[in-house]
Length: 556
Image 1: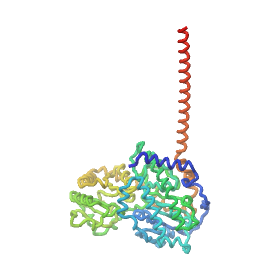
Image 2: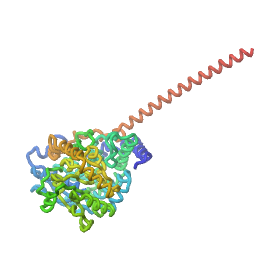
Image 3: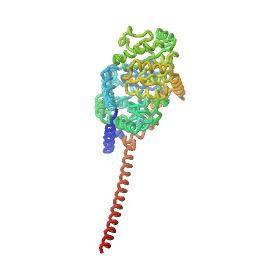
Image 4: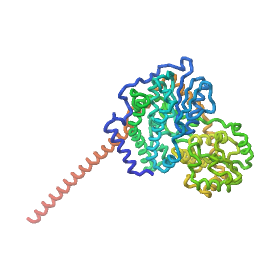
């Protein structure tokens, strides 16, 4: 938990640094070396009737990032645009105009030791760990042969648009490398604070909590103070790591590359994985476009392997699906937790359990007959199966959206980063319960599963949520494609840039106005106190004089 002293220290250090030197590295306003911004009327593609040339870079080492972005690159290619993609995996569908290269550095960096260290760290340390991890991952990816090929001067292709899965500023150098085309950033993280900061989207810590610390709504005074402190701390981390980011930029893009602070000015649109139905409603600047659930598609039961499909169809009392995503492996689970699951499944013998897990982690001989283990499964299609009654999930952003869209209740077991915030959303919607991993026992797990299977209110809430998610003017994927084409057609969208990016964070948050008002109140209070003190002194002095004069008359 955050200490009040840590929150106060973070806010104080950042505010003092910004106020002392508004034009310093803390400010991301006017660049030292002017770089030409794209003009709204500079049409170089699309409007001339030719396909767009698009570079898509999505090298973040989790399958969830790939699964969220791949539908966008595939759809852009289906519309005839030429898409060059650097990815961590091949998409299921590869249209003729989609050229995918799987980067050589995919997936080796996040191991069980790192995950355990991250889980055991506090919120402030987790933020620092993520900043360092993202920077190291970015530098490693930039050194990969696939990345070196497009950065090499001999690579002569040009692009009308760059689409980047954004986690670090060090890949913003792509804008400089390709002559500042349209630039769109995306993030599958719901409520991504680093992306909001990049776009100048106003932070409202009074009502919108930080992704890593999902305080309930409404927040108490100390919770709001902690949220504000976390916002300041993230800005402080960005400033702290900026020197390292600039060094990575110069190493891989050349000595003439502008600083990260300058390159941030050339990001035009952010596509964010937010859905008002699930996420806290908040204001977005025009350059931040919610496309939550962009990856969700109608379930296709024919995609389920035949043997598994038969096993699910034959479940007389339905089945429960349990999966903790692509990051957590069975080897990361404690043996006591695995044993508690197996014993609980035995007691839940009236329903079938489909468990995504590595078979070698759990000896098949010890499994009850109602349990089936699969190392991989088409989750989005299984979530649409009519006999599915409950989804036991880590509540990653993609899993939460898929389950909500299909009207499936969830038993949330959050593990990392945004998952605690995601489970809080569906709990508030009434379609889920939360069971923290450290609290899992056979009795607790059985009780929670039985409660959710027997209480129809969870299913009813899930179906209401599904109906709201499906009732949209345009699909999120169509919205994302339209904005990509818009930015490419106009070679940017500087007219949508948030003015909040031109002032330091303390000024944007009106902290200087609060300080001025505080000083004014203190000045007025001090003046009133001095006036009262002076009046009282004169009154007492006059009383003493009159008393002294009266005493002298009596004596005479």
